[in-house]
Length: 441
Image (tube, rainbow, N blue to C red; front, side):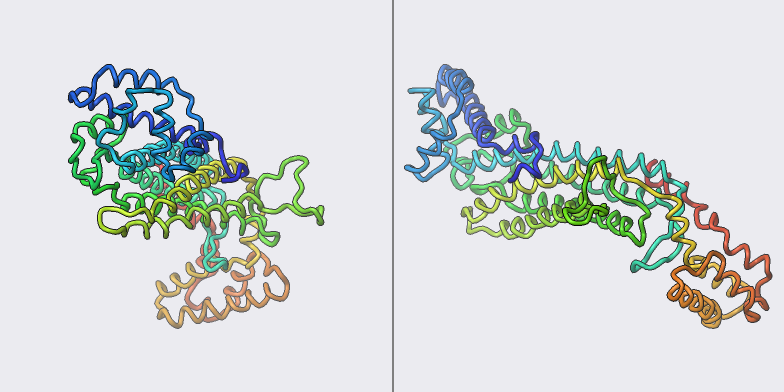
């Protein structure tokens, strides 16, 4: 993982030093439980805590041992014995390597998720604040990228808030599913270790118990976890793409904050590019990249193989670090997002009021016209506005209304007052409060 897309708090969880400290704690807590069962002396369990707890594990030394023994857990245990001495023979009694590796991964993912939840909360707070700020800021809604009917910038942001609130709920559930402990020994039958040891370690490490672990924790848990992260990444991209479109020169209804001294291009001094949201789109791809390998890790040979291991060594740190960085970058973008209400209004008016076409259509049907013929009446006037917009670049506010006033087939059914009433934009915003109460109540 490169520093450019890392926050120190998250990177620390995945450091070698942090990993070895968790390995030691699992082993030491296990020794406490074994001592209570009378399997090992209580004095030995204390010595293991005293000497191992004070140890500064030498990553280079562990790597040196691993180059000889070709086994990471054995290399660590060998190094640990250099601190503990004779009592080291009681470490790892009845354990298998996966007990340590899988339980450690659960601890790391749980801790990583706690940081991700902080990032999610920051995004939610930013979205809510800006949604309330622009609750009634009218803007054109677009479908297929084409002007549709008015909405508000607040509703746009409220929609993203609701999406991220769902994402947060999924992340909480994913944490619950992944935060499990397995200390069940080779093949998971507890043949050489009592289940109470697992219970003790789980409690001390803040984990639940995996009810049946074979020799590893079942990987459907991890698949569901990374899938939840992938959905959140897609939600990040959803907002990022919206902002990128709004910042296009031809639109320019909102843009990323451009700080003093910032430069947008090495060649073109005029550029103000949406670099942060483009970066978020890329980071989202990296997070989603982990989902398929995590799914493929579910199917392993019999009670275990290690085809999942190399995958998780990469995707677990990379995915959580990328997503953590992306969440805080997104929150910063939203907090500082520059929004231009006047440009939103002028863009909406460029099509001469076409966003009210459905109102006119419905009014004609209410006046007795069949829907198909009413549609034709509205569309033939609308297409004239489109042609004017195409040739002039701006149809002019009220053009559509003026054409309807001149259409004898329309005025035979609707009065001047009725037609004018169709062009009150406040009509489109009458249920904004209802939407906000549903989202933020």
